[in-house]
Image: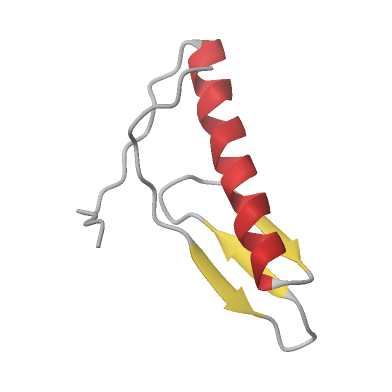
Length: 72
């Protein structure tokens, strides 16, 4: 599938019990838990991609971030 130039916010937080929780505030239901920060980053990326692919396959509108993002 062709990659779309869309950026989404993600948040990765450490959990008190260990591991990490990652989610995208822009995409409802896109959230994961992982043992390491890198694993959380990889998994949330995969979940966001799957969400967008599902939107396209279903003919749904692709959600866009409601925040301005700047690459630095």
